[in-house]
Length: 90
Image (cartoon, rainbow, N blue to C red; front, top):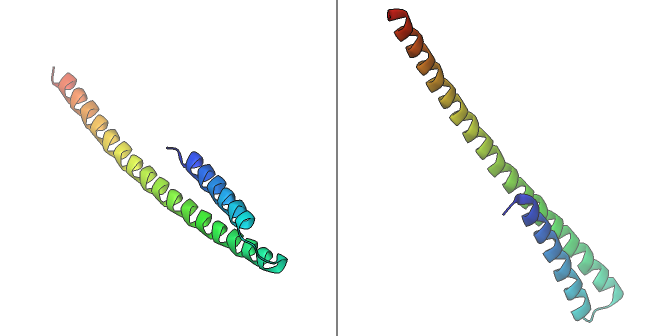
């Protein structure tokens, strides 16, 4: 699953949950507004944490790919050098 789809699902799920909570909870207007504000803050906090986790994982993947790329580059350079040495010997 892509990070974009996950984040979109996360946000849509949070919005649906918030609407359901408002519709099912008999509270005064002030209580409902406070509940909405608290819910929005909580949703933003969770979304921020999720984005940070995704960013951390992406950074790890990029770092691993860079290391693998360097390893491949070194192996190719060794093969090229060996090939040059063999052609010079002949």
